[in-house]
Amino acid sequence: MQTYDLFAPAITPADRSALFAKMRSEPGLCRVEPFGAYAAARYEDAAAILKDPKRFSSEALAVTAEPAWLGPNPVAQSMLSMDPPRHTPLRALVTRAFGPAGMARLEAQVRRASETLAEAAVRQGEVDLVDAFTFVLPRDIIGVMLGLDPSTFSEFRRWSTNMGLISSARTPEQYEEIRSVVREMKDYLTDVIHARRRQPGEDMVSDLLQAEVEGQKLTDEQLLSFLFLLLPAGMETTSQLLGNAVLTLAQHPEQLELMRADKTHIPRFVEEVLRYEPPTQLSFRMAMQDVELSGTKVPAGSLVLGLIGSANRDERVFDQPERFLPGREKATQHLSFGYGVHFCLGAQLARMEARLGLEALVSRIRGLRLRSPEVQWLPGFTIHGPAVLPVELVAA
Image 1: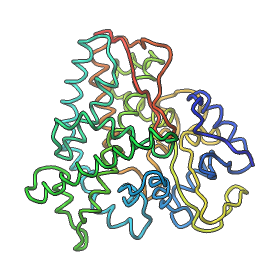
Image 2: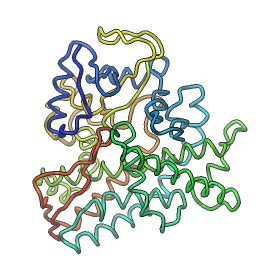
Image 3: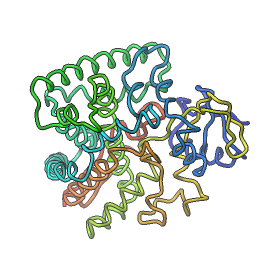
C-alpha cells in the first residue's frame, strides 16, 4: 500500500490535484503521513466514511484537535467530535439558529455588509480582497450573530488561522502560537458567556443559553466548545469559499460576463467553486471496529481521512472533473459541506454570504485582474484558500 505525505510544505494545489488523481487510481485506500492514517481518495469511499458514524467515529477530531504538545482544546469536546446519540440533542439545540427563520433575519445584514465592502474595494481599485472583502465579510457577520464587540474583530483572523493549523503544525514556534491562541479564545469566549448569562441580548449566544430540547439546556462548557468550533469555522469556510470564488473568477473572465448578464448564474458558480476548490480538504474519522473498505483492511482504532478535495474530482462521479463547469450535472453532490449527521450547520449561511457577496462585487465591476500570477495559499492542508488576493478591479 502506497504512503503519501499530504502535508509536505512544497505541495501546491496543482501538485495536490495530481497527487489526488494518483491516489484515486490505487486499488484501495492509501496511507498518509504524518498521522499514519488511512485515506479515502475516491468519492464512494469518502462518502461511506463520512455517513457511517457506527463504523467511522467523529471522535477522531478529539484526537487530532488535542495533540500532546497542545493540551486541552474545547473543540475536542464539541459536538463535531461526537456521534449519535450524544451528538443528537446538542445538534438539535444549535440547529435552530441556522434554520430558515434565522437566515431570513440575517439576509438584509449580509446584503448591506456586502454592498458596503464591495463599494469600498472597487473605489480603491488596487486592493487585497482578503483584507478588504473575502475575510472581512464573514468575520463581521459571525461577530454580529454572536453579539461580539467589533473592537475585538481584529483578533479573529489570527485566531482562526492558528486553529486551522493544529493538524499540520510542526515547529515549536507554531506550537507556542497555537497554545497562546487557545488560551486567548478560552478567556474571551468564557467572558462572553458569563456576560450573556447576566444580561441576555439579541444574539446567538443569548439564544443558545435559553434554548431547550426535551428539558435540556447547554451547559457553559458545551456552549464554550460550540463557540470554539463556530467562531473559526464561521469565518474560515466562508472566507475561503469567497476567496476561491474571486480567484476562479479572475481565472475564468467569461464567468464575470455571465454573472453580470444574469445574477441567477451566481448560485451555479458558487456550487461549482465548492466542488472545484473546496474550502475544507479533508475530514477525520476513527475506525470503531476492524473494517474493510474497497478491499483495504482497516484495524479498529485507526485514523481514517475522507479526502473531500479528491472525492469532488472523482471521474467516476463527475464528468470532466478537472474542468470548471457551473451548472454541471450532479452539481450539488460534492462533499464540501460533509455528509450525514455532521453535514455543515452553516452551509446555508455560507452559500448566502457567497451569493450576496459576489452579487455586490460583480454588479460594480467590469474587470478583475490578479496583480500577481503566483497565488500565495494559506499554510497547512486542511483549510484551502488564498492567504492574500491582490487584484485590480475595473469599475463598471
